Length: 226
Ligand code: G3P
Image 1 (tube, rainbow, N blue to C red):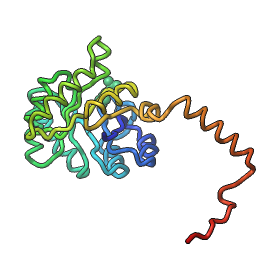
Image 2: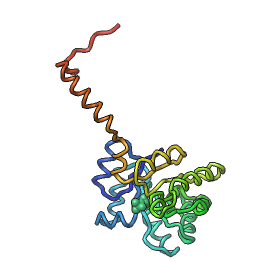
Image 3: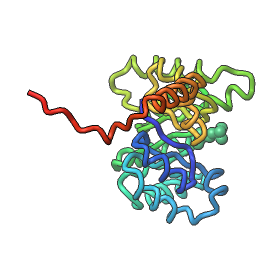
Image 4: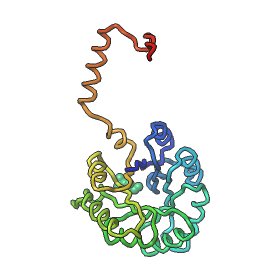
C-alpha cells in the first residue's frame, strides 16, 4: 500500500519525506486555504520535495475553466496529479486530461457507481472519502471493499483506489486488508500508525537493562572473522 500525506503544510511534508515512507501528497482547496500560500508556488515546492504524485485540485466547476486550470496545473511538474470533482463536467475533464497523458485524481467519491464512472473516464486515482461517510452514519470502509472488488473484476480498469478522508489507523489497516492501492492521511494519522504502548514500555525496559551492562557497542572492536 502506498502512503500519501493529505496536507498542504510544506514543513510537515518535508519532515515525513525524510522518513522515506512517503509515496505522494494530496491537497485540496480547504488545506490550501489553511496553508495561506500561493497555490501554484506551493505545489511546485511540494513537487520538488516528493517524487511521487502530488494532487492539485482545480478551483472551477465548469468544464472549460476546469480544463484550462487542469492543463495549467499539469505544467508545474510531471508528478502533478490534477484533482477534479466527481461531477459530469469533472469526469469529462478527466477523460480529456487522461488522453493527454496527465494523471487525474477524481475526488469527492461517495458511491461505487461514481467509482465505476471515474475508472471509465481514465482516472489514475479515485478518492472515496471514508471518514465523511462514517460521519453521516454510513460505513466508509464498506465503500472501499465494493470499489476494490469491482475494479478487480476488470483488467481494463487501471484506476488506483486512493482511500481519502482517513481519520484513524483502523481505516488504513482495513483498507490495506481489502487491497486498496493508496491511503492518504493527515500527518497525525501517519505518525499514529507506529505507536503502541507495549513498544514504548518494552523499549524503556531494554534501555534500562542495557545501561546495567555498562557497555557501549561502538567502543567494542569488531572481532576478526574467517
Ligand atoms: O483531501 C480529501 C480528503 O482526504 C479530505 O478529508 O478529513 O476533510 O474529510 P477530510
